[in-house]
Amino acid sequence: MALQAGIVGLPNVGKSTLFNAVSNSARAQASNYRFCTIEPNVGLVDVPDERLNKLAELVNPARIVPTQIEIVDIAGLVRGASKGEGLGNKFLANIREVDAVIHVIRCFEDENILREEGAIDPVSDKEIIDTELQLKDLESVEKKISRIEKLAKTGDAKLKQEYEVLSRCREQLEKGKNIRDLHLSKEEKTAIADLFLLTDKPVLYVANVDEASMHTGNKFSDALRGSIKNENIKAGQVGDEMIIMNNSIEAQISEMEDPADKAMFMEEYKMKEPALNRLIRSAYKLLNLQTFFTAGPQEVRAWTIHEGWKAPQAAGVIHTDFEKGFIKAEVISYNDFIHYGSEAACKEAGKLRIEGKDYVVKDGDVMHFRFNV
Image (cartoon, rainbow, N blue to C red; front, top):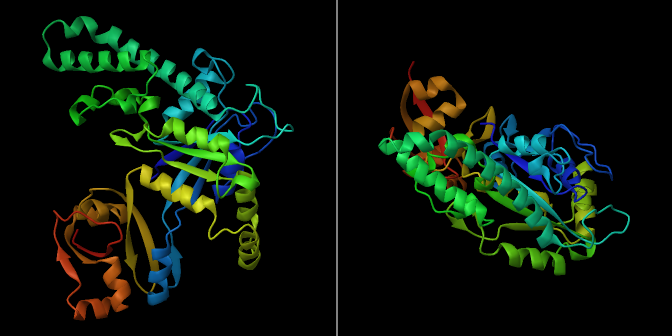
């Protein structure tokens, strides 16, 4: 399941530095000039999950396999991108392809790092990107309206509804508001599904602060939090999902291979875990993802599914044959597995359940599938 979260922001706010910190498989060039990132860098990122480690301690498998998401580092956007300024259309096309947005915003002062927009102003920076995405979405919506407007007047009920939804979207965007702040039903959403609107994507904000502010935040991150407190981070869900972190320190931690060195470094900065872990978990949640586990002597493994998936769909993540020939699922809740210490003990205590095709998988379920092809 190759779901992607794209890192976006103005030039020189710390996007590539953050990408370098989170990515296991690629290193993005991080330099102090505009458009350092041109082609988007893509990296696979392990999703930190202490449950996986605790299961492994009990099972003692040959290997441990975490689940992953893809993180994409996209070129910095500038004012006027919707009209082709800077990398303009290329940047916006790259955002259109991702499933969620990680918006990095500069919340620190440093005269040695270029800034074209004048004094540090995170709220203004956010608004610049919001405006460019809204203008591009408006262009997409208006193009579709022009295609179906005449047909919608012929009496076709479906096209008439599409036209009405698109008109509401146009009005929303003309007001300078995001589509995810517009309440649309699942049926109404189908009218704009083919447009992959940029402002309909869920968003996670990263306030990149200086070292002194990494635990408490500062006036810049406070201003940013205030500006997003009533904003929908994803359609239908109001929240102020924001991670405060120092991207440079996170990049240093990620480069350390010796666990002892890493622990000592984090202790020096009074960190219980890298802020990256919180960011990755938040991005995972933002994508409406959850995890189930398989546990045996060969491996303990985390698998990614969407919230609300049923047992056969979860089985299909392991192998398509598992879904096609699904018979049943043997399920143990994570808490029960930890409490009783093994699959055998859970079975003896009556905590291993047999579930059928209609079972909705819960986050943390430890599962074994029976199938026949």
